[in-house]
Each structure stands twice: as C-alpha cells, then as structure tokens.
Length: 342
Image (cartoon, rainbow, N blue to C red; front, side, top):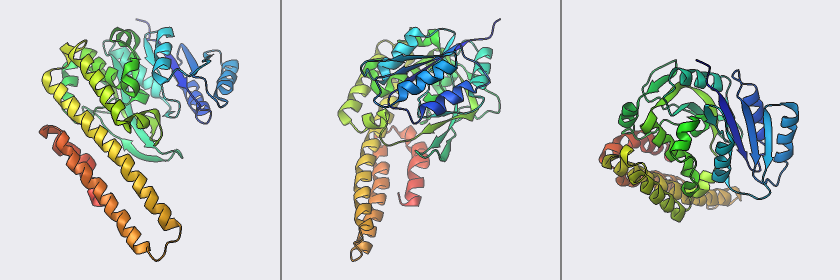
C-alpha cells in the first residue's frame, strides 16, 4: 500500500508578519506534502509578494491572489476544492507548526485510514510568541504514540466538557471532509469546528498526545470578533443546530444537542462578558497610569473588585450548562480564577 499523500492550503490576509514563519515551518517538515498553495485574500500589506518570493524559491509552493476580499471561510472552501491527495491541511498563518507535526500526524493516519481527521496537543502563545500554557487535552490519556478513537469512543468522549480537536493541528481525510459539506460559509468562524465534531462522530479520529503546534491567542482575531457579536453568535448557533438536527441527525442524539447548545451559550456569554470586563479594566488601568495618586487606592480597589466580579460572573454563567458539565468546567475554568482574584 502506498503512503498517504497530503496537500496544504494556506489562507492569508494581511499576515506579512507571520507568513514567513509559517511557510518556513512547513517547508522544514520531515514529511514532504504534494504541494502548498497560499491564497492571499486581497491583503493590503506585502503578504502577496512575500508568498510569491517563496514560490520562486520552492517549486511546491503556489500563490493565488484575490482581487477582492472574500473572507476566511470562502478562501478555505476554495482551497479545499482545488486540493489533491488523500489528506488536506489548512493551518492558520498566525499559528506555528512545530517540527515533526506532519510526519507524526501522517504516520498515525496511515495506520488508521478510516479516521476522518487527526489532531494533536498545542501550546498557547501570546502575541510576542511566549508560551502561556500547554493545552493538554488528551482524550484517552495515552502516550507517547498517536492512537485512533472509533466513532463510539468519540461519542462517549463528547460527554466531557472539553473537545480535543485543535484546529491548527487538524489534518482531514479530504474525501470525508468534502462528503460532509466542507467549509460552510453560513457557519462563519465555526465552519471548521462543527466539521471536526461531525467527522469524529462519523469516522472516528486520530490523536497525537504531544504538542505539535503553537496557537496564538489574540484579542482581535476573526473568531474573537465573532464571539463578541451576540447576534452573530446566535445565528451561528442556530445554523449549526439546524445542520445537526437535519443533515447530520444520525450523529447527534438529543442529549448531545442539549449539551452542545448549553456549552455554546455558556462560552458565548463568557466571551462577551470578558470583553466588557476587559474594557472596564483597561479604563481603570489608564486612570492609574495617568498618575491619579489621590484616588490610587480607591481605583486599585475598583480593579480588584472588577476582577472578582468577572470570576463570579463566570460562576453564575455555569447555570447555562447541563448539570453534568458544571463540576468539570467549574474546576477547570472558574475555581482557578477565583483563587487568583480574576
């Protein structure tokens, strides 16, 4: 049996700062893909020229430049339509791919060709590239080799509050992704997230229990902007639920639909509240830094109280979750914040 093949698509918009790092990391991988296609979505910086420079030096790199901006989801769908090979990978340009990511992921996929996708652990990093934590979800707790989880195992694991697929490590079986509808524009930033769940429940998933990428957590990304828009989040939720109840009804029993909606509403509420609390915190900090010494103690007390209010709000938000999610989310998300006064 021949080794499985991989095609990589890179959507880019105004990512001149990050594009060289991503392309260098992909080209330095020990596993060589069939090709790497960069679609520049009408950037206003010099991203397109940077990509063209890589294409001139590396024959497997191809560049397409949009005349007008189409958006992330439309660009991803375009990349999927032109892809070849057995598997498809579309990393976010502002994330980082670590050495061995492609080789280790493709090795476990080769052993389990029925899997719909493969993902791995990641490090979270800030805008300066400093690692802030290891996102350590390891669904079966196994290691160190990659392993496969059958659809029934994935369905059982969904009962846990944290889903283990990290988008910047997700390598899809191309045919399976196309069969379930690919990247649906109507799902916005969640176009890949729902497909992760659908593919895992339909075909099973592979997992590599070690960090193979770094995921940048920034306040002004496409997903964070969507999460701060309540109307958009409700629209995406309702669209996803309609797909789960209709086209993918066989994969989503009632208990899973209830749990998914409760979790979605919880995180939507938390994201929007976090943004508002952050705005107030930034305002208080600016007043403190301006040298208001006479009111310094009062302002510091206000900042402390605001942080506690933020943590208590998250605790109250747990009421949106079904009882079986309350304990795990409280232990993982709420109690640490209360201890830190945040």
